[in-house]
Image 1 (tube, rainbow, N blue to C red):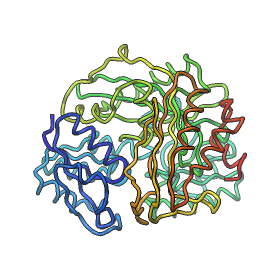
Image 2 (tube, rainbow, N blue to C red):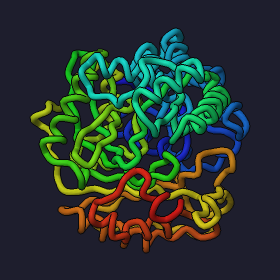
Image 3 (cartoon, rainbow, N blue to C red):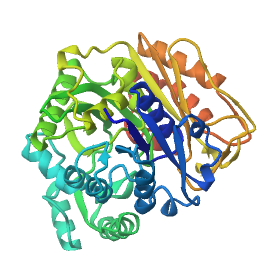
Length: 447
């Protein structure tokens, strides 16, 4: 086991990683920007190192500063969390060249699965169902129009290096496709320094369901069931739950097996997530793989009782998985709501500023992952996530009730948050019935 780990992230995930490290007996080194100098979790770290000013390019995305901090602190490993450098192939390679363990898969695997068009072909070759679309990247408008004609409209153009909904455009006809193709390439270049795109059939009334996997360096692979992440706004997840209310046990097993087969095919060794779109008839299609811990990982922890962060760290340290597939038992239902400092009534405009009052919910089977506190000033430089509320109950109906109670208790004064919107969604008849799709918020609420 690593004796000293640097946490190359911030906010709630930095605190979550810190807790996992402490549970494993490892010392922790937190890096922080000037904007995060008052972060609550810094007081719990073994050591804290300031790495630069608030803007991410000069702090959390600056590889040189982070590696320098790691060398000064003499750490054995770096945990990147999610976002920032967590799926950066170059950063993982730099860590390796500096003899620092990167807590995640190899740079080669990050590169392969981070390129969405390459990952699609890998999945296809592994026998995992993929959405009809282009074979690899699409380089011209002519090719785009030909492919769209073959698979039929609507289609979606996706950035090969994309993530977070950036570099994605939907087209319902040839005229819209030409415009969308140009816009997607430009956005991909601006966001990822890579204009490469590919095309798929757009499945507009599907569910977003992902399978959590764990794999060690000895070829052992297990899945920990699914998370339903269908409630999204502009490809950004708002609510996640497990199990999905819309798939059968047979489909669940098929998706789990497909996810494990893909991981075996690429010799994967870390935690990761295989994401699928699922249709009303429960036909499912691979869309991408995330080679990192997910924001919504607590949902899986609640229904399995397995600490994913600890498992991820132990895998990176060369240990075998602590469980087999037969050991994994699924209990009850879990829901997670992301609480963001945004104003839903003003096009989700960010709402940074000082939290004047702060009270977190509690009670049986209620968990809050958050780094915030009363008096904390939310910086304007970063993602607007304040924290996550996670509940667990014997049934989905009870879990929804527990979440509504928890959201009623969660008091965050002085700024706007998404709590009112989340309560509206949880009370919506279609959500209660489990009859939603990824376009639900846009279709039902105009969001």
